[in-house]
Image (cartoon, rainbow, N blue to C red):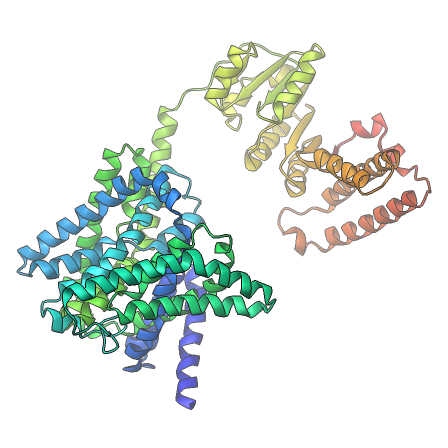
Length: 634
C-alpha cells in the first residue's frame, strides 16, 4: 500500500510540475507528460518495471479519446468535409505510408513491418497541433483549416490501423493471440474458432453496438436523469465505454474501435455535450498517465549508443512528411505562407503512434530493438514540434508579411483638403459619415480595405485607400487645414499610434476617437484624444433601459435612470482616466480602484433615490453642451 501511494505521488507530482512548465513555455501538455516520464524514468530512475503494467491501464485513456472523437464526428459533418478529408487527409496518409514502406523494404524489412512502421509514423499529433493552432490564433487561417482536415482524417484512419496491426503479425494466429489489452489475450472467447465464426461474431458485435447506442442508450440516459443523482450520469457514461471496450476485447477486436463506433452513433444525441464534459477529466488523466509511462519507458541507453542514427531517422521523418505536405498544399492551391504552416505543423509523429507501437509490439510485429528506436523517433519528433512552429513564426511569417507589404497596393494620393478627416469607414464610421454629410459637411475618408473602398466608390462615396497608421499617409490627408479628425478604426494599437502622431504634430487639432473598451479609452486619452467614444457603451445602456421597462419600471422613469447612469458612467471614466497609469495594470492601481469604488457607490445611491420617487439634478449639469465640449470619455 505504501509503495502504491508513493508511486502515485511521484507520477502526479512530476506531471503537475512538468505540464505547468511546459504550458508556460508554450510546448503543450502532451510534451509535458512525456518529459515528466523521461525525468522520473531514464533520468532519475524513480520508476522502473511497473511502468509497463501501468501503461496497460493508462491505455484506457486512448479508448476514451476515441469515444470522444467519435462524439464530435456527426455523419453529416463528415459528409460536408469529404473533399478535404479524402483529398488532403487521404493523400497525406497514403503518400506518407507508401514512402515509408518503400524506404523500409529497401532497408531489408518485410512489407508487413514496413506497413506497420508507415502506419505508426504517418499520423501526426492532434493534441499538440490543435492546441498550438488555438494558442497562436492559426486555426482560421487556410493552413490551419487544411491542417485540421488532415488531423480529422488521421483520427478516423487510426481506427482501421488499430484493426490492421494484429493482422500484420509475422507469426500468424499464434502471434495474434499473444497480446493483452487489445482484445487478443486469454480472455478472447474466439481465440480457437474458425475464421468465418470469428468474422460473423465480430460483425454481429459491431451491429449490436450500433443498435444499442442508437435505441437503448437514450432510454437508459433518460432514466438516469430522472433519478436526479448527479454522479449517476458519470457512472453510466463510464459503464458504457468500459462495457463496449470489454465486448470488443472478448470477440478479438480493438476496444478503441468499439468506442469510436459508439461515439459516432451518439454524435447526434442531445446528451452528447454532457457525456463529453463527464468523460473529459478521466480521458485527460488516463492519457496523461499513458504519455508519462511512454516517457518513462524510453530507452535512453539506446539513444546514447545510437544517437546519430536516431537523430537521423527523426530528421528524415520530419523532412519526408513536410515535403509531402508542402506538395499537397501546392496541389490544393494553399497560399504560400499557409503551405509552410501546413507542412511544418504536421511533420511530426503523434500520440496515436505510441498506441500503434504498443499494439505492434504486443502482436510481435516489431522486434524489441525496432520498437525502442521507433518510440524514440516518435517522441523526439513531438519534442521538436515547438521548434518547427518557432521557425514558422520567426522565419517564414515575417518574410511573407514583408513580401506582401512590398506587393500590396500603394495608398491613394489625396489632393483635396476638407474640414473633417474620417479614418475608417466600417460599421462605426459609416454612421458618422452619413450624419455629417447629411448636415452639409465635406469629409476626407480613408480606409484600408480595398474591397470596401471600391464598393463605396460605386455608391458615390469618395473614399481613399490607405493605412492610416503610416506617417506618410497621415502627412498627406490635409491635417494642417482640418478642423476635426475622427478615428473610427477597430484596431486598438493603431488608433493609439494615430492619436500620438496627430497630437505631436498638430497639438491644437480636435480628435474624436473610437475606443474598443474602457481600458482602451484610457490609453487614447493618455495619448491625447479630446473625446473618446466607447463603441458599445450607448447601445448597451439603451438595452439596459429596455430591460428596465420589461421588468416593470415606468418608461419615463427608465429613461431618466438610463440618462443618469450614462452621465455617471462618463464621469466615472473621466475620473478613472485621471489616475490611469499605463505602466501598471488596472487591478494593481490602488488609486484607480479607490476612485471606482467611490463613484460606483455614489451612482448606486442616486439610482436608488430616483427609483423611490426622489429627484437627482446632478446629471443635468453634466449633460450640458459645455460639458460635452470638454475633454472626456463617452
